[in-house]
Length: 174
Image (cartoon, rainbow, N blue to C red; front, side, top):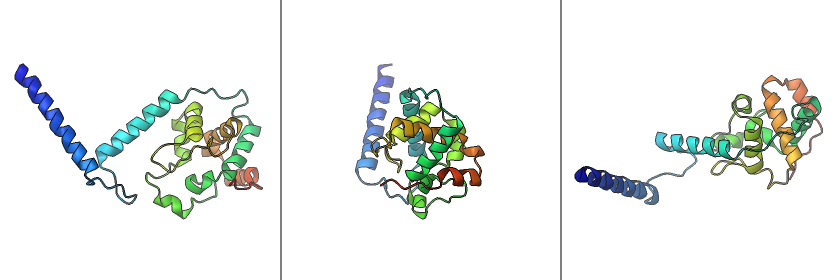
């Protein structure tokens, strides 16, 4: 039994040293044009999902999802430039978003997968090592962020005409 535990310990040290040599020795490419190894992609995806799930504790306001909030959310979504990376009905993603790694998610797909609290947390805090900024640090109020979340939850069923009318007159925030 003692030999078995020593072998496991030695193996753990060897794997740890190998990983350290791989990452800190410059063998791991941080280029945005390089795909991550499957193990890295899996680990980052799991860590991101677990972190969002653990930290997303805010409750939506009572008016969450009403028509006025969704319309305000479309205007806020447009004014903060969300469509640049995530698109919108009738609005194509800007070319530079194709260079982000990982790719920005299509929010029509994400809208059904994440709860309002999880979406709020992501928009408010951003996500490290992606192009997703913290909108709270960019000056967005909690009310504005909740309106964006209300719009994103309705995004899969939003028509191009509705988005255009709801977001017309939006001024890009700088």
